[in-house]
Length: 193
Image 1 (cartoon, one colour):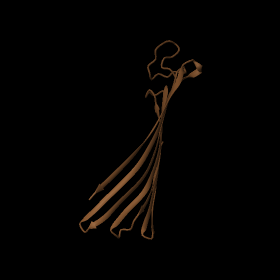
Image 2 (cartoon, one colour):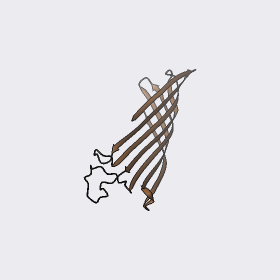
Image 3 (cartoon, rainbow, N blue to C red):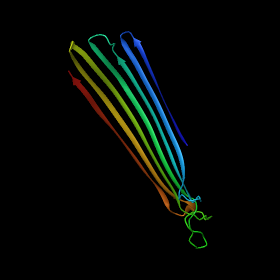
C-alpha cells in the first residue's frame, strides 16, 4: 500500500505600505510492502518494508511596497522533516524437512524455523530555522545597490536499530542501537551594484 498527500496555502495581506506574505506547506508519504523471502510458491520467509515521510515548512515575509527608491524584504523560515524506514525479515519454516532428506528450496515443509527474525529501523529527523533580509536601493536611473543576508541553523538526529532474535529462547540474538545528532549554523550573504 502506498499513500501520498501534499498541500500548501499562500496568503498575502497589505498593511499600509507593507506587504505581509505567509506560505505553509505539508507533505506526507507512507508505503508498506510485503515480499516472499525466497520467491517460491511456498511461504518460507516474509519480508516487510515500511516507509514513512512527513514534512512541514512555514515561511513568513514582510516587504516594502514596489514604489520608492528603497525596496526591501525580511522574513523567517522553518522546516521539519521526519523520515522512518523499517525492514523486517521473518523466517517461518526451514528448507530441509525433519526426515533428513534435503528438500529443494521451493518444497513445502511444516518445520518451524528456530531462527531468524531480523529487524532494521532507521529514523531521521531534520529541523531547519532561518531569518533573512534583502534590500535594493536605486542610486540613479541606471544604477542600483543590493545587499542581503541569511542566517540558517540546521539540526539532524539519526537513529538506527538492528535487532536479531531467535524463536523459543534458544540463547542467541541481540540488538544494537546507534544514535547520532549534529547541528550547524551558517550565514550567507550577497552584495552588488
